[in-house]
Image 1 (cartoon, each protein chain N blue to C red):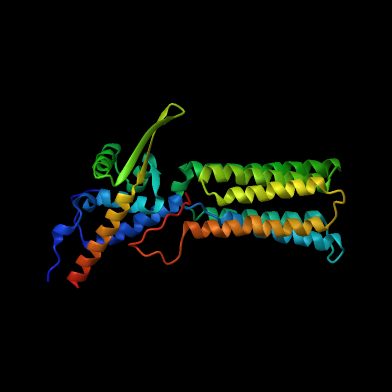
Image 2: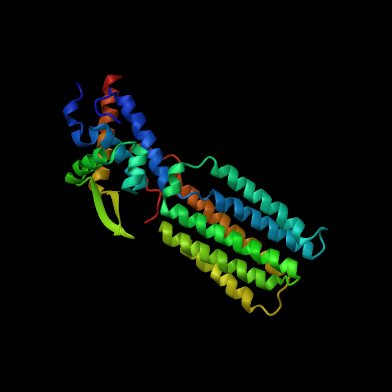
Length: 211
Length: 99
């Protein structure tokens, strides 16, 4: 960038816009992944609830496998559009790491449980709630978005609730479907709004990260 | 009545410093390396411009060691926010004068 380059007011405005956008993207903590996976989990849990009561035919694998693939593909398609500058950001690394850990943990547990015939719905539910709560806790610390601490607390509460349940029945699936919508999809939408507030005029900059 | 071009903030008016302020006004804070990548400038060039902005209290610069590696974080100040807003308004006024 050369200070001696020919300047014009319109050129400066274009520079301002492009740099503001770059700054917004850097601060933006993309909530799209949360929206995608929240929606996938909501559908999966609700579908499994219908399966449990015989409203629809099929098996657990036929629900989770295709939905898991859909969620992964959508996330990958979205990643291709992301600003590469974010890859060095510690908050983004924490986010990616946290959710990778969730995915790896659940796949390993699910796979080994099915292979050994020891699939216990209560155990997998408690484990899922715990790792999701931990992921949100890590992300809240890394991004300094306070709202995510409440989300983490919500998942810890559901983990405690499911642990203490004496009668672990299919109604828990409805709770998990609602939790996925309220404690994953909704925060994702809020994060997207924080990252890209609509109608922000050029001369009234907005902070994309909650302090 | 013609617009007084001398009202334009000289400190922000530099292209690199304008880019820095524009970036920070939305990012609020950034790592030195992130800024360098976004602006595509050298270390020395960026340091010089950051010093000038810091002298006017438009930004704050925080240097610390993380895992024995030096890390410099730059954040826009309230003064910087107001100065940038005023600069943009002056620029808009100048554009309006041209029309």
